[in-house]
Image (cartoon, rainbow, N blue to C red):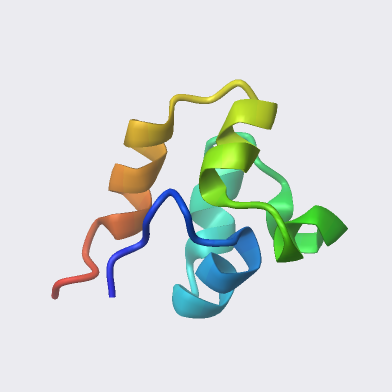
Length: 65
């Protein structure tokens, strides 16, 4: 299942076990944030001033394997 910009951070954390490491590498400490249960990846990237595409690429890397 591909990760999209519209997925909630909490959903991404449940989908991909290494998502916390990837998010933290981009400067997002979303692992314990209460907003992660109601904030999309796109919204979180905007709040943190991050470009969405590189983040999406990193989160989707290796999912097809």
